[in-house]
Image 1 (cartoon, rainbow, N blue to C red):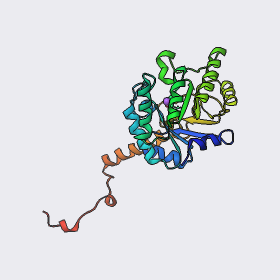
Image 2 (cartoon, rainbow, N blue to C red):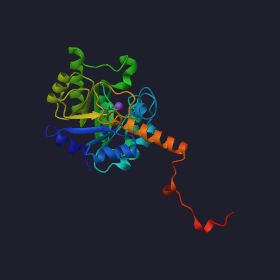
Image 3 (spheres, protein in one colour):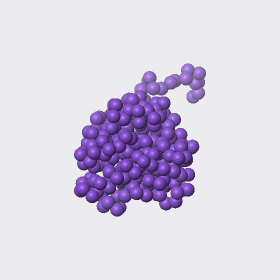
Image 4 (cartoon, rainbow, N blue to C red):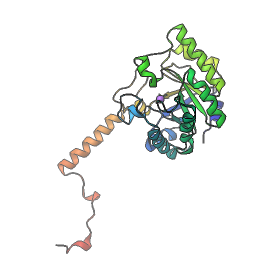
Length: 270
Ligand code: KIV
Ligand code: NA
């Protein structure tokens, strides 16, 4: 069993590996591969639920998928990604929603897309015993404000704001920080400034760890961001298998004798 203390202990010693998962088979595969942190990302919306953003993902959906992942994982730390507007609207509701991820779905921690508005909430959750992973840089729940999914922290002012917020969240008690789609040199600077681990996605090689979306890693996504890398062709293999199944039923090749059972006792049925 991996704890937030184990993750802090790996910081600067060896790279931290993190991967999303949304269901039992994905979580089993990640866990058995030795992934340190399994994130039930709100990328659930795009990767699994067919939405074109993460905004529609609900607390109930996150609970259900996190519970499935937590049932399948034996070793990794399980982190539930708090959906859009499940936090930040009202402090009591934010704490209750985050608490449900631990109480009902068996998550070990939650992740919050962070900003100036999450410093106090992070402090409160940590005080109550809910470990928090922060997330700065590109925060896709703000897509309507950002006007897209572009790189963040590209000018001096924006970069300083990320450095300051990173420090604020470390001080608030976050146990780690995701840095998404920021310049590699900014990520390297934040990593040097913080004691807690940075986990990068599209943030260069100098973070303490890396995270990607499961479907991007296995080659199941229909679109993959330029900073991700498919390490397989799961979609191609699934298409081949399903195509072969359809063809075998249509041709009568499936089911064959070995997939069927003839009960001798029924020989006088007609
Ligand atoms: O939702 C998600 O998958 C994420 C990771 C990309 C960090 O937030
Ligand atoms: Na997310």
